[in-house]
Image 1: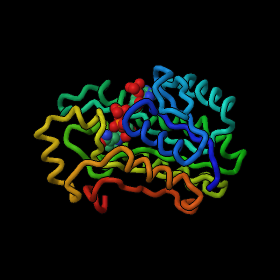
Image 2: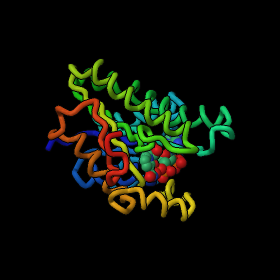
Image 3: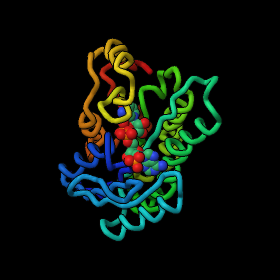
Length: 236
Ligand SMILES: NC(=O)c1ccc[n+]([C@@H]2O[C@H](COP(=O)([O-])OP(=O)(O)OC[C@H]3O[C@@H](n4cnc5c(N)ncnc54)[C@H](OP(=O)(O)O)[C@@H]3O)[C@@H](O)[C@H]2O)c1
């Protein structure tokens, strides 16, 4: 196993925190961003970073590079929801979600790609969602932002694939985090019924897949969408 320098956005809680824990456990050099500048797991460097602000992302990268060396793996994990039915969805509800989930991922890739091209190695991993391809009532903004990450990964693959970079999408289903805890209990029960596995996943189950996609073993996989959804989105 080659030890890598890994940067995960939104690593202070939820799936991002679990991803950081997994990379740390595997012995990599790990940094996370959080908006407050604290809160990552033990063994990871936590730096301040807001994905809606390119200067903040640039500063986060500069701090990580100074401490841990060139960033070889990025995980665009930071994300938000502003769920509401389309008739009630304001333009701000839409653009705020796009700005964080999609443009935020672009800002990250843009800042990372120069170093990756120089090194002729890079792993870009986007945390999308089953909802990106499956759709979700009340999630026009969120699902559009998550579907677009697939196009981004595939375009990056075509653009930079010959230079040692891979770009993939991990699409979690329902994961036990604060994001899903906010859903009403009845809705959670309904989702559980629709999931062939009959349960939500732990964040650690997503983290294992992300770490594998970044590993030497997955070097010939690019432009893929890898579901971690208990069978919910089969074929989507
Ligand atoms: N939970 C699920 O079931 C599920 C399913 C599919 C996909 N996902 C995706 O997985 C990712 C993580 O979700 P989660 O459930 O772990 O969510 P979460 O518990 O709500 O955590 C979201 C993370 O994103 C960060 N974040 C939000 N806006 C940010 C910004 N502008 N700049 C930097 N960081 C920002 C948050 O930081 P703060 O602490 O500062 O707010 C937090 O660390 C998201 O992209 C989500 O869409 C989740």
